Length: 236
Image 1 (cartoon, helix red, strand yellow):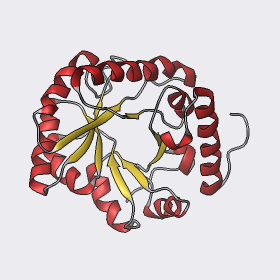
Image 2 (cartoon, rainbow, N blue to C red):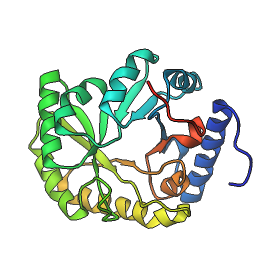
Image 3 (cartoon, helix red, strand yellow):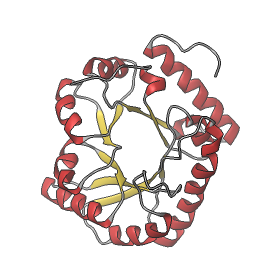
Image 4 (cartoon, rainbow, N blue to C red):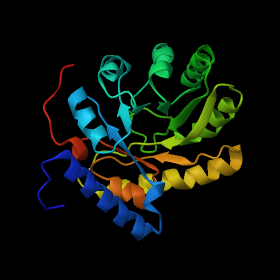
């Protein structure tokens, strides 16, 4: 986009919604099928309160430690999702803080979340993170390991696998992400038929490539910079 970036969050959000609507129209989808998650890593509570005042209700955090400090300072009606890598020793606190976890990437993590859910007396919605690019720098299950992870999750009582998440390789061209997003949707359809899990959620697409993700079936887009604007590193 070559047009100037709006200078306030409400205008940026309206612009994003318009772009999502157009992407849905191109793909023959309904805009209600796509939800915006505000990726609020390193954003101060004041920015989150501003986003909430604009109607955003779901916020994604990358680190348990940051969320622990931040959530009590934010509006109480918000829903928080874990979108960063989760360590098994943080599972209990993550289950306490977050409504859902988008980044389960091993049997060990699934088992830890299940145990934490049992301790908290709740079923925890999770997404399996899938590393479709094969990049060693990225977390996520290799695609060939996903069927076994779904089978393992079927034996857990407190975990409900709602879908899949992925992050494509970094690229200046948003369309380079299309094969990754398309493959996740296609693999989802195959794994759904094999496993019996509905896997209705596809968490894919960020500020740079969310329109491509919507065209390829995303139900969650995780938006940070395009929503909050460029910012200096924040210290909570």
